[in-house]
Image (cartoon, rainbow, N blue to C red; front, side, top):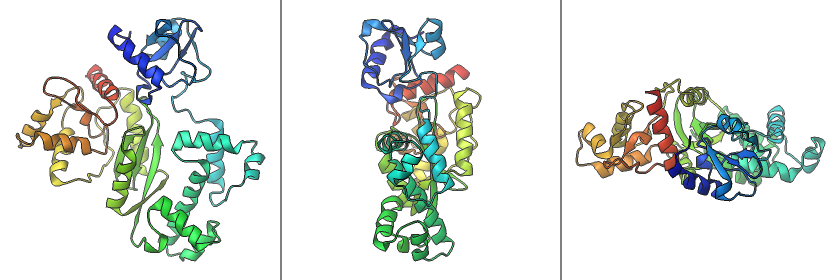
Length: 348
C-alpha cells in the first residue's frame, strides 16, 4: 500500500497532472467510485476524497471502477483509433499530400487529428506526414536520385518550398547534405511513461523520457554532432531496446545487450563504462564513482558526465546518489529515479 508520507505528494501530482508519476500510483475517488491515473483530465477531487493505490488491481479490489476518461486499465499512452488509422494511411501512401477532403473520407475531424498527433508525437498530423515524405526523399537522394526528382516525387512543385520543408525537418538543405547519415527516431511506451529512442541500423544513440527537460536540445546536439538527419522510423537497435525495456519493467532483465554508441569525451565514456558495472539493485555515490575510475578528486566532473548521459536506464545514471543517501538529481525526474532503484532492489 501507499505510504502515508507519499499521499500529499501524489495528490499534488494528480492536481498538476504530472506525467512522470504515470505508473507509480492510481487514485480512487470516494465520491464517484472511479479510479484514475495521475494525468486524468477530469476535475480534481478533494484530498480527503482520495484513496491511493500502487496498482490498478488494488483499486479494483477496493471496489473502484476504471475511469472512462483516462482509461487506467489501458496503457498510459494508448494509441487512439484515429492515430492508428492515420498512421496506417500514411504508410499505405507515404507520398500523399493530405487535404481536408481526405480526412472527411475517413470520417475524421482534421482538428481532432491535429490535436491527437500533437499530444502523441509532439507534431501535428500534417507535420508527421511531411516528415515521412521527407524520409523517402532523403533515401532517394542518398541512392543517387536527383534533388528535382525527389522533390517532385514527394509532391513539391516549388523547389524553394521543398528546401524549406526539408531544412525544417532534416536540419540541412538537400543539396548540402553530402554524406549526412540517417538516424531513425521511435516512440517507446513504458510503465513510467513514453521514451524516445534514436538509432541507426547498428547502434542506439539516445534513449530518454519524452518529458525530460531539455530533450529538444539533446536531439539537436546529437543531430549536429552526427551530421545526421533524424526521421520517424525504426531500426534493429530500436526494436531490440523496446523488447529489452519490456523485460526490464517486468523484472525479467537487469543487463541490456542492445549495442549503444557513446558520444562523449574519453572522460565521460570512462564514467559511463563504470556506471554500467554497478549491479542492478545497488547504488554508488558520486565520490565512490570518482574513486572507481581513479579520479577521486573529480566528483564534480563525474556528476557532469552523469548528467550528460543520453541513454537512460541502459547506462544507469539513476544508480548514483548523494553521499548522504539522498537521491540527488535525475533528468527523468526524482520520482522515476526512486522507482527505478526500488524496482531493481526488489528483484535483487
